[in-house]
Length: 199
Image: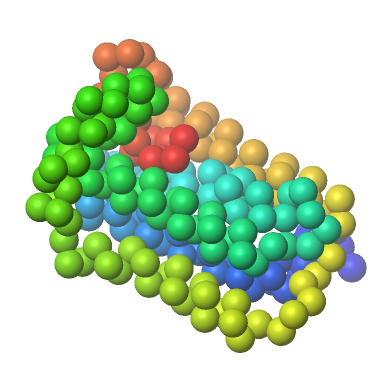
């Protein structure tokens, strides 16, 4: 059996992790297009929006098994909650300021905290849909028989290699699309469009 087939077989046995990555990817793409109203100017923009979350999500969900012999299902659900919380917090901030949360802004607590009194006004009934995948993950976990597949060190390194390759590829394509992507005065919408909300 080829190494690629072994890799895919081991991954397919962990349905919860696969569901988590797929659902978080769909959620991130939809929030980017519908919530952040990212302007699509070319086919390359579409490709970037579709693929820029994948590497980051693979790495984040990978923490549910990187340091363990088997995947920890409860960690998958916790990580899904954290990613959803970050995405939703970014969405609320965007609705209030029409801007995106960046690392410098995170340290300006007055700016981040400024949306506090108006938080409920910023919420939409549709926001509850952001929790649907987490509830489904809990249902999958409840119905899943105990005894996860033991993941070899070689498989984990292959997974990490794939994740980092996808992440770096997205970064390179983003820089090709916009050479001054990381300039201090650069358009943050293009930054999010090019490398995603989690990078």
